[in-house]
Each structure stands twice: as C-alpha cells, then as structure tokens.
Length: 546
Image (cartoon, rainbow, N blue to C red; front, side, top):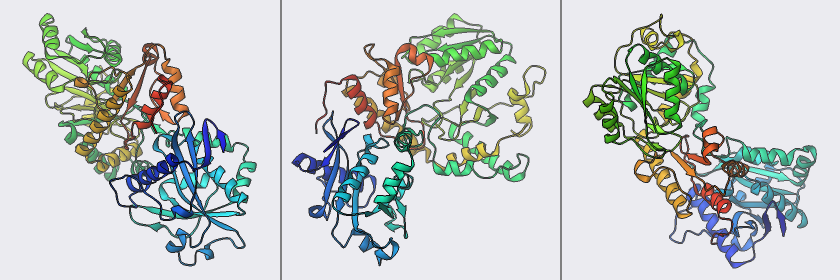
C-alpha cells in the first residue's frame, strides 16, 4: 500500500473495492467507450477477472475508487486475439505481462491519478519479474500514453466506436523517463492543468473541436480572393439563419468591439436612449455609451433578477423622450437570461429601437433577433470557435459615416464593402465556419439545457446557492454565490489545481465572492467532478457514500 497526494494505491482485496472495480469498468467500457452491451446491473466483470490483479487508487478523504489498472501475466493476452503474431512487433528477449482496464473515474481524470497507477503497476510488474508490458490504449488518450513512456506499434484494433492503439512499455523506458527528465512530476502536473485537457467551465476562452482547430490551421488566404468571399458569405448566411437576422457584419476583435460599433451607430441617431442594468455587463454598456458620448438614461434592477414587462413599461413611461433601449440578453455576471420577446414587444409598442448584447447567449440558446435594431455577438463563447471575430446583427441598411465614426467601427463601411472593407483574418473566419457547420444547433441547445438542469440540481442538493432563480436562469452560465466563510479566489485556485477551470478572477466576481461555471465550448463537460469537489471544499465534514 502507498499513500501519495492524498490517494491510497493498493491491490484491491476488499468486497467494496471489487464491486467498485466492476462499476468503473462498466462506466468506462460501456458508457464512455461503447465496447460492451449495457446491462441492468451497471457492472461489468472482465472476462479475465480471475486472472487479473487490480491495482487501485482510493481517494483517502472520500473513500471512493478514483482509478484502477489491471495486471495479468497469463498468455494468450487480449492483444494475441487482436494481432496475429503479436511477438513479432515487440522487442525480443523480454519478460512480458499485460496491462488491462486502465480507467480513471471522470472526476479524477487529468490529475496525477493516472501517473500514480502506472507507477504502481511498473513496481508490481518488476517485483513479479517482468520488464515489459503491452496494452490496448484508447486512441483518445494516445498523447497521455506517450507522455508516460508507452511506444505505439502495429495497426489500430477494435471496433469503429471503440478503437485502440497497441502499445508497450519497458521498465527501462519508464525509469529513463523519470531520471532523464527532472521535471517529470512538474510536467505531469502541467498536463493535468493544461486548459486543453482540464474540465473547462470558463465563459471564454472555450474549448473547440479538432475540426475548428484544423480549419484555423489551414494556410491563410487572401481576403480579396473569390474562395474566401464564398466562405465569408456562407459564414454570414449561417449566422443570419440561426439568429433570424437579415444582415451581420464581422469585425476582427473581441465582443467588446461589437458593442463599441453599436454605440457608434447609436451616436448617429442624436437621440436619447435608455440602458438597462442588472449586473456588470449592463454597467459595461454604460461605459460604451459614455465613450461614444451618447445621451442616455439608465434603469437598474437588483442583481439576480430578470427584467419584467412592467419594469420596461414603467421606465419608458417615465422617460417619454427615449428613442432607443440597450440591454443584455444574458447578463453574464449573474447568469440571468432576459426574455427577448418581452424586450421586443414593449419596445415595439412604445415605438423605440431595441439593441441587445447577445455575446454570451448566441450559440447556447435560441436567439430570435426579429425586430432588433442592432445586436452583438462573438465567436469565442457559445459559438465554440476561436475568439477574435466580433459580430453585429441588423436588418436595416447602413450608410458609411466617415466624418463621425472611426473606420474600424463604421458598420456602414462594412456593408458598403460586402463585409470586407479591410484585411480579414481568413483563419478565424474558417474556424468559425467550421464550428457553424459542425453543430446541429437545436441538439446543442438541448444539450446545454440538460447540462444546466443537471448542475443546478446537484448544486441545490449540496446547498450551494445559485444567484439566478430557475425561472430566469441562463442555461450556459451558472453563478455561485459562495458563503462568506469561504473565499472564492481560494476555492477557484483549489479547483484549478484539481483540473477544473471556473471563472473567479474578474474583479466583480472577487468583490462579490462569486464563481461561475459555464457550458460554452464544443464538448459538454459533466458537472459531477465540479460538484463533488465543491462539496468537499465547502462541506469538508460530509463524506460521500461508497
């Protein structure tokens, strides 16, 4: 038995440990990798169970199984059935064993558990007189296997949904890796905390698919060429279709730039407006308006609330000279989703123009911009693409205003030039187009809703309050109001150390002792690991059941 980093490494010998092995085996090789058929027991007993030695990792605090790996030394190995003449692929004059069923529970992936299991198995194999092991490693984790010293060989084996790369590991290679690299442990920790590998619950930058990355990495092309013009127009068509807009202008910059461009357009009206505030990003609209020297009033409601019809009606009745209203569809700071239809109906009835910040909502919930004067979006959040493309949606024609608006913000100049007045970074547009093509958007919206229901239910069960009520909650943004007995920065740092990235370092979050978990990226990261860690950090006296 070994105790490392709060984890116990041992050979499974207790009844509950064996049961947990079968349950984790099922979770990995039925639910995650569809190699075996489901069963009602949700337990999978390996066909070589009686021959396996299970080395397990137990979370000492929670007394639950964090990971397992199986050692076996009886031929034929499982790879013997998958590769003819297995030994012909391997170094000669070796004493050979087999590694099976390497699996780490979801909430412990991308921590040091995998490295610890491999280290314990190498020691066990050496003690038994073996100096090389073979494994069928899932193709999803080849990078990690190579990092740990494994050498791929032979063709890919398995089924379409369960593909494996045969690999071997020698004792010398593993030992040399540790001695040759004094930073082995540090690199392992960095691997665990790599943003690309960690559980990314950030509002941005978000995770994106390999297809998006591949599109971005294609050679740049001229923004004046016909090929790029075709792809650019297709991107705009996609964006207009999913937002029910007539036109969209793409600017090279962050979402903030899109709101600056909206402010510049509102300045051309020379009329008084109303800015709606229910959190940090409503206040940022005020900053945009001040920067553009707009004439405006403000209407503010408490944080955590959504604007209701009566709020807008009363505000506009008190301010009869208002000709435009500007607010956030999603108030990202609080995780509140405002009802676009309420905005639209009240503004239509009062004859005022409606502008919306849709930077955090576009791509995660349906957005219908019918009748909206101007609306902002961005590529690096719910669109699950690479940050750097700002969007402004509109229905009406825009004319250039070179004497009043800086060129880079002049939406009329963009429209006049078919959207490409200046150099456009082709790689960013191609990445965005790949993201647009990749998703079935209705399915994505439902996936976000399921994630929201799951995390909110789990948080409520451990008495961690969410700021937004269920009735007005933004599905993709959950803001947690931590008790003052716990520091949000400390909690955020501890979560990061365990491979869970949440938003907590912005000034307004630190000031209010809030953290945020978001579902913005291409893949849905299940919330169980986050919730389990929060329970442990906030309620240390509570132990989870085995």
